Image (cartoon, rainbow, N blue to C red; front, top):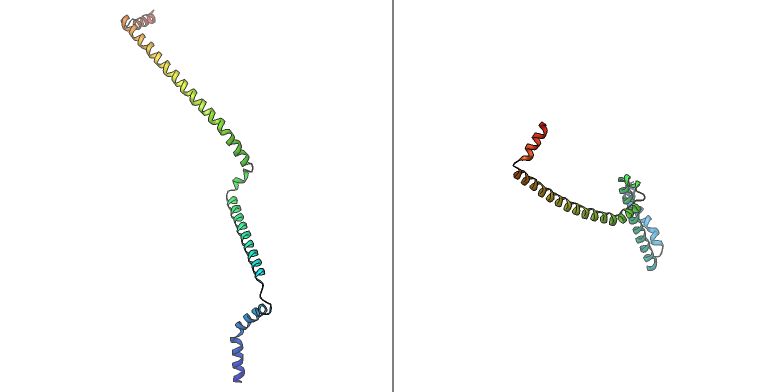
Length: 144
């Protein structure tokens, strides 16, 4: 009886190693694979790994895109961008022309202001020569 109890304990003790051995026993029955087969499997593994990385990258890009859903409305954004880019030189040319026109108009304004000041000084000197007669004339004309 003691022997049967001890045998039962031994069976329970070696149950896990026995299961592992039976699983690995099949690989021991087959001959080892050739070097070429091993290299093929390694190349296939690397290919699957590269494909997995590509898929994960695409998934991350889609997740990012889903985060900015409003960007999906810009389906023709590349065409719009190229149109805007082609517009840039024309707009820059218009800006340069506008700035040149501004400088010319500012020059005309400055000349007009100088001319006005000359005229204003001339008017002031005529007033002095007339003895302030312009003011008096204006006053008299209002009274009349």
